[in-house]
Image (cartoon, rainbow, N blue to C red; front, side, top):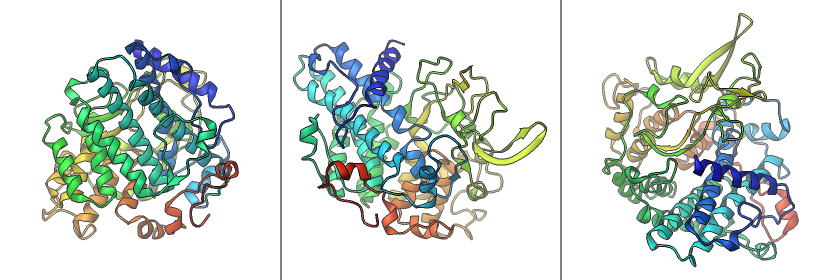
Length: 471
């Protein structure tokens, strides 16, 4: 509870400061107004908790990876009424403008989050603390920084690389670095994290990153770069570590009190029932836009028929993941929506259900499917299918007419296993399938639109920052 209170205090400071006028990189905002006074381990724990609190923003149900992976894919549509509707629909319609307010908001959020990690990394070097503690803190911050830059390079391509706290004046000297350089920085951060972080079984504070999390993310980075051999090596280390396993049933993964299971590799922690705590917003945000349950649902990431129909007959994951609709005064409304993060018993305060559900950024089924992608060995994929009580790839009863190659089988399995978990668009981009798949489903996508525009306000503040092609 002490850690949660520290996180909340600094997160509130972050929110208050986020409205201030800042340079285009938002490099000096936020989370620790007494950074120059870092001395004790308790001081650093406060700052570390603040860095972890940035996950609540980046992985918010209306955050950047949600809009990218669900709205820009074939998985979801949006029916929410809050905010600037035109800006929200631009993601779905592939009509993003350089003036889109949400693209700029997401850009700011990432650099604020990276600042939180950088300030800790900067101050820990000169701290008079035990070396193992310092190395552990550095590894955690490098993981978070690597994660955020991995998201950013997939969203914007070339981005400014910032690894130290900068003044506003200095920030204008930092221009976009080529994607290759960004990936080099990501790999450097994650390799260090994987070397210094403890195994999952040695983690004593729920939600702190482990060696397996760094290795899993590094494996995904290698696959994104087309380096299947390196991906296979690091992902097999996760597989052989005996730290993780699939839960017996897919339904066992979900529920407001299901937290940090053997299948979870990196999980964002929420505390329901308290309006001042970081309660989970996925339930409300993903519920249809009505107030029949005493709160207004956000209507975000409503499930497409295309995703629903992707499930095979008898796939029990479908009914665990998706509801067909809801009842309105006795009339059934057919509107499919995600239900993995449902918390029907959540306390409601001010029209918000204070849900308790955690969110898994990385889990073991993801590792298994990535391993098949890296190695070409369907054994790992078939572990996932066996848990789902479906015929194995290669069996006579497998739907090979529809998924005729192992690549298509992986694509199908990742879509159904990881539905609405913020993976789909990045998956399609990684396998060079985004344009053929989404064009075939009516999306106005082309090569240029595989990246978001650099926000116009960024370029207005620093005209040396270049724009992505097509914008």
